[in-house]
Amino acid sequence: MLDDKILEVLRLGGDSYVSGEDLCKDAGISRAAIWKRIEKLREEGYEIEASPHLGYRLVGLPDSLIPSEIKWKLGTKVLGKEVISYKKVDSTNDIAYELAEKKMKEGTVVFADEQAHGKGRHGRQWVSPPKGGVYMSCILRPDMAPSEIPKITLMAAVAVAKAIRVLTGLTATIKWPNDILIDGKKVCGILTEMKAEQDSIDFIVLGIGINVNTSAKALPKTATSIGAELRAAGKDEQVSRIELAKNVLETLEKYYNVLTKNGASPIIEEWKELSAMIGSRIKVVLPKRTFEGLAHDLDRDGALIVRSDSGVLEKVSSGDIVMVR
Ligand code: BTN
Image 1 (cartoon, rainbow, N blue to C red):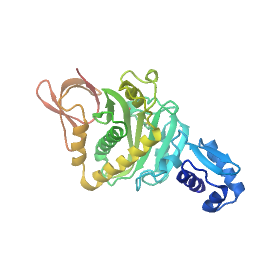
Image 2: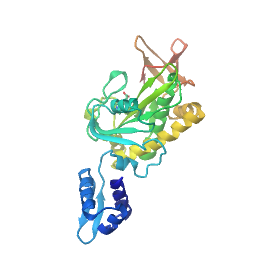
Image 3: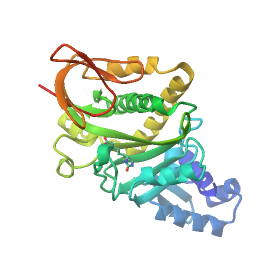
């Protein structure tokens, strides 16, 4: 709290120095205590200039998904009110799951700058090199039946695609159920895990991984990163992982509220608009069989309706989709 106060005063100071005296007054602590706090903030990655006559000035922010950066001017009411950050973990989903079991409240978000064993769907690995992307897991406690969980993942896909579009101007699209693609390559994956009773959800861990600066060499052939796509589009601007994470939280909260208040149909409509695949030829890979057809529609539960080559409409509730050219 005290660190947040000091940071706030320094941030408001902009390019100007803030005198030690003013900092002491605003934070309500002694000069020696301020000095200790400034040292601690520097260890976290804040670049703070100190001048004996002028005071302190904030000249650089850490490139880390830490609470003080995520929470600064975050426009949410619930999501991200509690932020827990790590430099390196095995999987943010595992940490969030443990916290949720210990009754951590809805809206808690776990971030990491690196994952040693990032988890993907169907037991795959999610490549998560240091500061290569946004790796985050949100604890949600919706008043929904377990069978409604696909609606949460579709909602999250809509929110992330929108956030990426707004922040970067890149045309992010959705591939069923919740992969986010840019130029046909995957930039984001979503892994939803849940604990539930027979007919009610206890909690959901919504894990989101977005490749931001990950090099193509580290990623599977079918994947890309936002930085690479911006460079391919001739833009050399950097995408801030912090800004992206904040945008995702704000957009996610907006669509989560829509889903819980108005139901899934507005989300499904937006999903269809953002999806690149309705009307396209696809291959459906199920555990025991594979078939090709045309992606026909999304039903109101979020299942994909596929018109198979034999003309039959098939409902696909889980599985992998491959786009066929
Ligand atoms: C997929 O396979 O498409 C889902 C990938 C989900 C990756 C994210 S990164 C943050 C969170 N923690 C994990 O271990 N996995 C999810």
